[in-house]
Image 1: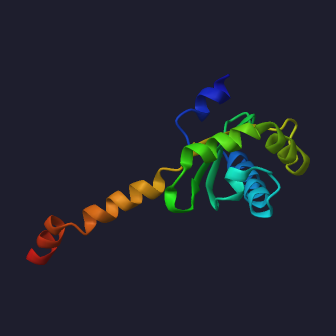
Image 2 (image 1 turned 180 degrees about the vertical axis):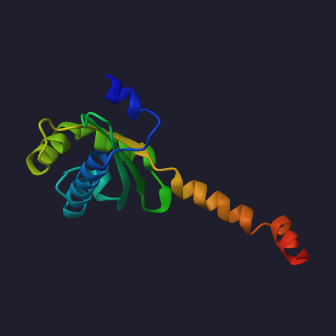
Image 3 (image 1 turned 45 degrees about the horizontal axis):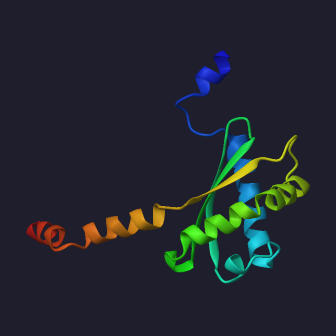
Length: 132
């Protein structure tokens, strides 16, 4: 228990990062090859920017964004519908004691970076920079 408390507040372990990357690569491969048979998924190009693993490696949270940022809700629903199949495929390729349950979330980093760009290129910031 002391080890678990010491881990709180710190970033993910090397093992969590490594397993997250393996799961991310497998998900991306499945989507690119069309291994998940679904009309919604087939009609979108989906980016999986990150997969975060829980400390016990039993839960994986995949952050996704369809190209253009449109139709995020139907894409997430389609991925949820195929959760058992996805988990089974991950179990076959990623060598773990148990396959992680995969949750899908919208990747909001694209929106955040666009917001920062808008701020940096705003007229107010431009005026402040020209003063120097």
